[in-house]
Image (cartoon, rainbow over all chains, first blue to last red):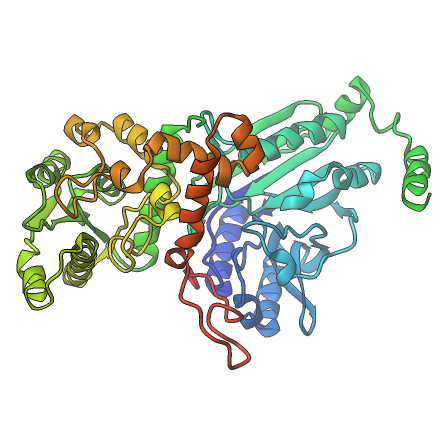
Amino acid sequence: MKVRIIQFSPVLGDIEANFEYHNLKIKEAVNHEIDLIVFPELSLSGYQLKDIIYDISKERIDRVLVGLMELSKNIDIVAGLPFESSPGIIYNSAIFFSGGEIIHNHKKVQLPNFGMFEEEMIFKAGENFRSFRIGNLNAGILICREILFPVNAYLYFLQNTDIIIAVSNSPHRGMAEDGFTSHKLWERLGEVYSINYHQNFIFCNRTGFEDGIGFGGGSFFAAPGKGIVNMGKYYDEQVIDITINEDDKRRSMISSNYLRDEKPDIILKELNRIIHG
Amino acid sequence: MAEINFKITTDIIVKFISDSVRKNGFNNGILGVSGGIDSALVLDLTVKALGKDNTFALLMPYRTSSDDSLSDGKLICDKLGVNYEIIDITPSIDPYFDKYPTKNKTLIGNKCARERMSVLYDFSERKKALVVGTSNKTEILIGYSTLFGDSAAAFLPIGDLYKTEVIELAKYLGIPDPIIRKKPSADLWMDQTDEGEIGFKYETLDKILNDMVDRRYTEKEMVDSGIDREDIKKIKKMITGTQFKRTMPPITKIHNRTVGLDFRYPRDWNK
């Protein structure tokens, strides 16, 4: 499976301009015979929406959704946008489009709400980590902060996913002698999920600035049992093509089978004891 | 203080300047060059971001300004090949104080800083160039600036770098030695130095600010590490006492949606 990661900087609040960019990149990817194209978190809206979110009407979003559904007749797409499920109830969604339809809408569960983040002010939290099919493969989506809770990836791992598509709007921060410490957050977990959870782990992060906050890029692909095998540039826009080898997961599991040796019943029993006493 | 990565810091600031200017529909940047290290560094970074032909400098001496300020300002502009204009602000300042005399140096200093701001914004329109600010993190945090004077700008490229980091980054980028070596001064009056006026060495001040702000150390942890409790108190007071310089003026709430409270839009709205 050929996957294209689009590391770019959306226009903050201009859904239509961002859709035009998606349209262009999707058509290019179709010409290049790509199977799946992945855009970052909130790729159609930008991140620091504040009150802009209430100006983005459901009609405008619906038009974009219909446009992406149409484009998905020729290629599978993951894109992010504020999704208004009913009037005033808005989720931070990453949606998988395929065959002219919305196949899966993952609604972000862990909404960061501290320091420069204020997602809980505008979004309702999602409640599920459900896998879905991409061709022969089983996939799950994680959005930004969700990646940082290993138990979320674990839930996909137990659903025997082959791919985790992790989309992000991660601001770079915490400068040290060897660069921003924030990059390591994602790369460390990409290594863990690819090796310990046997996942094809795709990390797609945005670039650019919003009100001084810079987004770090550094998208990557980590293959089962191998860790990071394709690393994108930090800070700059980039198109990154990767290939998922369907045999990698089996090889990784034969080498050291963490899924077979997993004991979810014991985890559940212990969780019940911890939570309910 | 922990070292920062100068190459990445430079790269990010250059991208930020370029992004800020272009997304606001400009191609050019303009800044006041004082002959000091902050504006020399920002000039260098702006040239890296926009090119020398899209960067303009204004040198705005007052009659009491030191000769070094002008010569060092010219030195950095010439080194970078930037077009500059020298505008003596004395004729704009002195008639006012002839009419309203004062011996208060702060009043004269503030008036000069605001006059420079006024000239910068006038030239911003003339040159179709966005005003690039030169405030650093140390002075922003302790409020060592003139409100609506030197703090006025469209964006602040080095606003998250402490003064000691500014000096190190300036060395890394090859800012001329005379600018790096001289004592930092707002040059608002003769023999003024930042450290003399603030009452702290920048090294001490930055260490305390970094511990307090970025590392979130408690007062006890800082005292245990050898920092003077009185110094911590003085610096805390400087920060809290100047919060008004770091925020928009408050608006008393009447209607349902009040600007800044519940009319909340990013500055980069639709950009």
